[in-house]
Image (cartoon, rainbow, N blue to C red):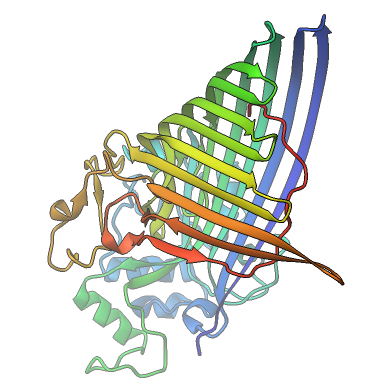
Length: 518
């Protein structure tokens, strides 16, 4: 019986300190400065188990090496590897096929502890090497990877008593096939200042400057049930030797069938470090021709620190910071004795190294990792109107237009391929079309979750009755087509639509507004 379960827990520790200083220089100049410091540590743990699957719960039989299992399961495992043809060097390891290997089953902390010189399991080798840079792949050679250690051992079954097969602060589980334990630590510092100058009755100037630094350290410790792949003939011979298949190749039910090859336990540890620092700024000019109107022009830069892809031993362990330059020309005004409010703006956001989620490879196969797209541009306009038509009737509406597209072409850092291979397009299934014909260029594609046009209209009427008041609210809204994937696949978009909410109760605002820049 199969009963797949998982347990996840997370521990957060946060420390934040900030010192601010406010100063006025006469009636026209203000200055705000500050120091900011922040520490954060996030521990995430995941245990995936199935008590009902004996392939995970019980010790593996190694066929021709089964006679050695009671006294020396390690030698039984290695004997089977020789007999069934898997005693080959592993990627990134020494020419000795036993490097690195444990005489016992390994768990989630085995590779970490052995790499630090404190092995819990007896090793078949003198030490576990740091494989950083051992292979040209980013998983090993990313410049921010500090440590990579791999450790394998025979599969002796995962019972509740096997502590290294349980997550810290988690339940004692049986039949675990995968564990991740990750630690993500951040130390952030910032110094900032913003000053405002009321030049005269018409113009005001705001200037801001900020320096920020982020120091990040990430660790991932994994525990996996794995099978070394055998040829079809050797896989059949192995399953027959364990009693899982009879001489005709039919299941016997006496032992679990191994669908890939020889079982073993795997422990993976990787440590990554990176530092980010950036200077961002802001310039804003306000023009106030009268007490009821405001025009503003602003330019602002921003930066979001990079980070790590932890939990699956991703082939792309790190990603770079994302930067943005935002330009905006806006208007806010009151008219008709304060009963009509009009807000509008023209904007352009220019992004570099956009953080997006892509499907890539990992120790477990395909997984989702954050990567950088070269850029994106989001430009358009927004308009909002609110009118207190009478004491009883309020009308409102808004409209936005956005020309939001990716800028530059995505390049897969794993393969070097230009563009993205779309595996979800029903018009070009992978069974009929090679990857080259399913590759989609991203430059100029619509941004995800950003419709080109969107508008809404609403009205509210308040009716006075003897018992009090009754509010009637109705609205209608339109949202243009939305993309949920960076490709232009028709299977990853939502068509445009219109909707409304007649008869909903609401409240009519009773105060006027004072315009100010955002």
